[in-house]
Length: 111
Image 1 (tube, rainbow, N blue to C red):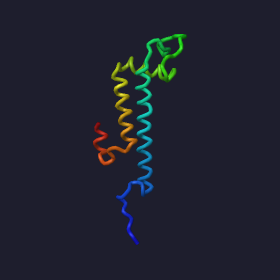
Image 2: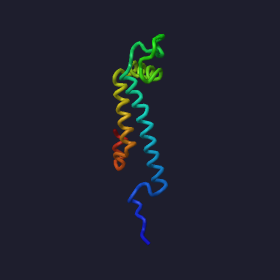
Image 3: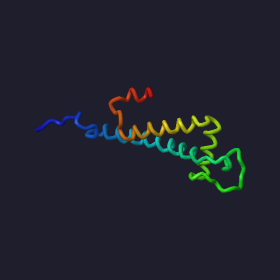
Image 4: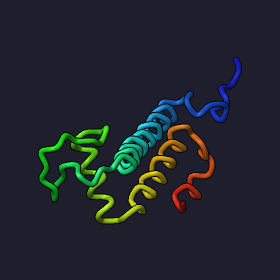
């Protein structure tokens, strides 16, 4: 009878399988809001109704009222650094979801 080599695939054990799914969920939870904020800011219209702007005009942001509010808040608080931070978060989430750098987790945390 052949011995099972646990180093062959990380998904052969239940713990490895759960670790991989948790990594994918973490990546998606980082990518989703990051991409949302980037898209919202790129299509920001100053006349869109938001927390500090009352307007009866239709919302021009393709993400609707949540996109208009998200774009307004991040551009007021952080300027164009807000979408840049969101893009970095989305990129980092995509890398985590894709499984890039699984061996270098310590370096990923330092980024």
